[in-house]
Image 1 (cartoon, rainbow over the protein chains, first blue to last red):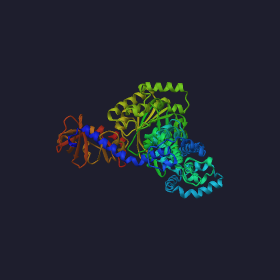
Image 2 (cartoon, rainbow over the protein chains, first blue to last red):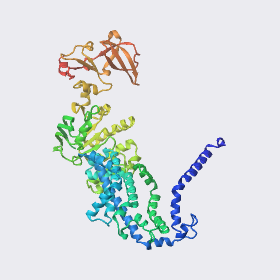
Image 3 (cartoon, rainbow over the protein chains, first blue to last red):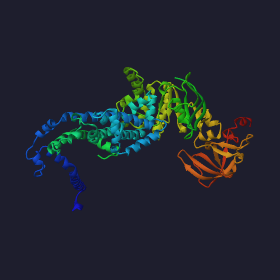
Image 4 (cartoon, each protein chain N blue to C red):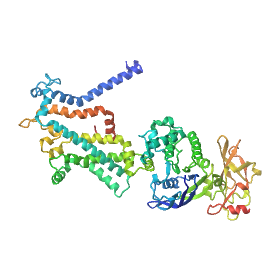
Length: 284
Length: 344
C-alpha cells in the first residue's frame, strides 16, 4: 500500500507519524505543567479527590490568596531584581574576564584557565559551609547580597567566563587589529568590537544565569530568614498550614505565577534560547 | 604623504629572531612591495610599520618622526587586511566611518569623507549593506575605502588579494594601481604573488629569514639578481641554476663562477648538433600560449625551457642555445658575479 503512494503523500504520512510520535514523547513533559495550572485553580479537597485535569469549579480566588498569605508580591520582586542584577553583573564580569583570558598575554593565564575549569567540577553544596562563614563574617546574613555575590563570583560567573573565553578565542584577531588601527584602546576593542560580535554567547550566559538565579533555592534557604526578603523558590515552599503540610492549591497557583516570566521569555526568544543551550552544551 | 625609513629594524618573539636587522628607505609616494617565501617576515615587518607589533630594536621613521613607540592610530598609516577585517555588525557606511568616529571627527565631515571614498570606489549603492551581503571584491573595496577615509600618509596592504579568485584578483590589482596613481600616497604592499609584485611595484623588497636579500625595481630584480635566491624567486618558471661545468658550452665564465643561471624563457631550442649544450626532453607541458619543457641535460641536470608554438615531444634529443647577456654567474656563496661579467 505504501508503495502505491506518491512522493508528496509519503512525505505527508511521514510528517504525521513524526508529529504523533513527538506528541507521545512530549506527554511526560507537558502533563505535569498542565496539572500544575489545573490544580492551581482547584480547591484543597478537589486536589485529593477524583483526579481530573479540568477543575469542577475554577477557584480564581487562589491567586488572590497567594498574595494575602505572605508578602508574595515583594518576594516576586526580590527574585526579579536579584536575577536581573546577577545576570547583568555576570555578563559584565564574565565577558571582561573571558576576554582577558582569551586575548591578553599575562603570566599564569593558562593556570587561571585551568583553575576555572577545575572550579566547574566543584559542586556548589561543597562550598556552602565556608561561604556561610564568610557571609556571616562580612555581616551580610539575611540580606540579598549573598544571593547576588555568590553566583556572580561563584559557579555562574565561572561558567559565564568559560563560555565567553571560548567564544572570544574564536573571534578573528584581524578584527581587533583593525580596531586598534582605527584608534581603539584594548577596552574599546572589547566594548565596541568583541562584545557586539559575541551576542550569541552573551545571550547564552544571560539566559543560563537568569534561570539559575531565578531557581536558586539552597542559598536563600541558608542565608535568608526574614519573610519579606524571601525569593520565589523559598516563598513557594512556605505555603504550608500551621502543621507544616503543603497547601497544594496555593503552592501550585504561586508556582504558575512564578513560571510566567520564564515562559514569556521562552516564547519570545525561543530560537535564541535553543541556540544558547546548544552553544553552552547544557541541558535545557 | 610621507616617506618611510627603517634603520636596522629587529623583531624577536621569545628566542626567535623574526626580523634580523632591516634597513630600508621608501620615498614619498612610492609603491613598495615586500615579497618572499612563507615565514620570511614580510607580514611581521608590515605589522611593525603599522604599530600592531612592537619594534624590538632599531628605528622606524614615518616622515621625520620616529614612531617606534607611537600608537597605530597616531602613525598616519592605514592597513588593508588579508581577510578584509570588516566589522560584521556594522554596515558599509559605519565600517568606513568607524575610525573617524573613534577619533571624534564631526558627523558632517565624517559623512562627507565616507561619501567621497564611496564615490571613488563605486560603493555608493552599497553603503547600507552589511559585509555578509557583499561579494569578495566588494568587501575588498570597502576595506580599501575604510583605509582611504582616514587620509593616511602611508597605506599598508597585507596580501589583500589572496582571498579573491583569479579573475577578480587581476581586476582588483588594476584598481589598486589606479588608486595609487590617483592618490599618490606611499604604499607598502605584502604579497607572495610575483605577478602582483612585478606589476604593481615601483620597488620590490625581497625578504628571506627576516633579512632583505635585494631591493630594486622589478626590472632590476629580474635582470640583475644579486644572488641565487632572488634569481630563482623572481620570475616564473624559476631560473635554471646549473653547475659551471655543465654550462661550459654556453661560453666563457668569469673567474670564481661555480654556477650559471639562465631563465627558461631565455633558452632556445635547436637541433642537437647545433646546440651549445644538449639534452633530451623528459616532459612537455602545454600551457596554451607556450609549452614548458623539462629537459634532462647530457650532464645529468634537469633544465626548464619555455617554448612558443610547437614543442618537441618527450624523449626527443634537442640542443640548447643561450645568449651571453642572459647568463647569470654566481660564486660559491651564491652571490652574483656582475663585475666579472663586465670584464668578459
